[in-house]
Image (cartoon, rainbow, N blue to C red; front, side, top):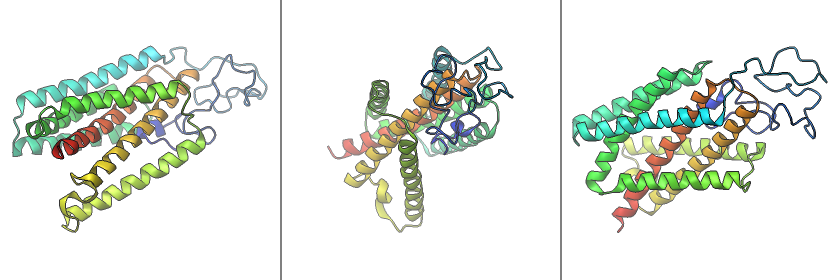
Length: 286
């Protein structure tokens, strides 16, 4: 089973046992009560090779391991790059057909960079920050577009994104949500179905079959779809949090923190875009 986030479907973030990331048990110091205690590194992608069953725990291959501070720092750099790109696009690109074209081009480049990074075996800070910069340009243009019609919508969307992210982290850390295999399977199946339905809806809109945006209209149905998409974003965040925790517990190399930052950025961008649209829908109905 793979994660919702393409950067986490690489080595170490998709295992047959456990939910959708590393094993559910950390490495050293957790042997007691650990169902994998006979071979603590049986499913640890960062453990030394050739460990015999029943052998005592050994240190990971690398001692330069990822920490939560690394994840926070890289996430701040990546999200800061998005914010700078958005601010520059907002300030330098007035709302026009040309800026819309640049936004679409930036989104496509960001998508390509994200896919290239997703299929690489090792994280590339240049690719990740390049993605963040172009994604920022895209967000800056569409945010300015929304603000020109619904004043204050981007600011409200930012606050909404922070609220959803904070609430999700609080619920996750409080243990109210347990990221299990069943939880991940059901959530990912729903997410895949949602993406397929939205793709079909887009095709119907393009060919004029569905008027007014179809399921993504600026009405009650569009609002319900937007709320559902934000809940999916919160679901993605819970997977991200669990996978990061497991990566730290298993002693993932420090450069993997770039992947953690990349994954969180992808999810937060998803939530922000959906929140921006939702704010616009509610503002239109006032």
